Length: 227
Figure (cartoon, rainbow, N blue to C red):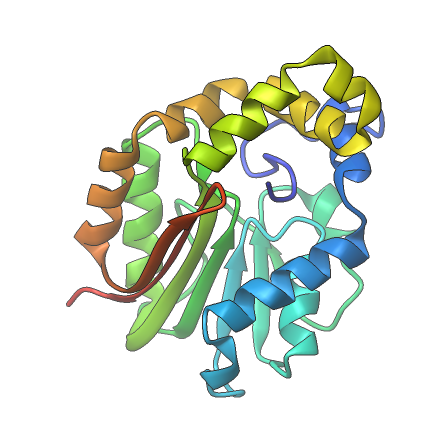
């Protein structure tokens, strides 16, 4: 899971149940460490430090903090929620914008990252196709993408079973928080998880896979733009 369905949900109040659950699921420090580990697994340490990087669905900016910790400085965040963007305190430039219509020139970025935002898109395949077309448009020919999204693996299905157990939710704050988040994003979450072939087909329409895995309930994809 990744910061809220901020791209397409109405701006949440401090009492928003998804936001409240997310704050219980993991601390900002824990999320930054998670993002740093993911970036390293995706060979981010080999990326040129002067790469122009954009993270979509950046939310509060913990992914941007992770990039900063790895030595990148030419980084930007995009999100549709000004309230969430206002919570970011780093040096990256943040822009309020829709991922389906990015405010960047053609072939102007080296890397585009999405960590847990694509499964909040309201309509598949149309919104995913439009988002990927925009990402490819703004990437330089030598650029790359990195996606990390939930995936229906045996591990994730087991987690779902546990989350549905009232005793497990009572004993574990983390399981209860995750179950609450799933409840409040169920339509888009299940739409995403039940159409893996469609998701992969759209991804490979726009990007050439260089690194891809489906483990521990996650789809991890690194690729380059198709000509």
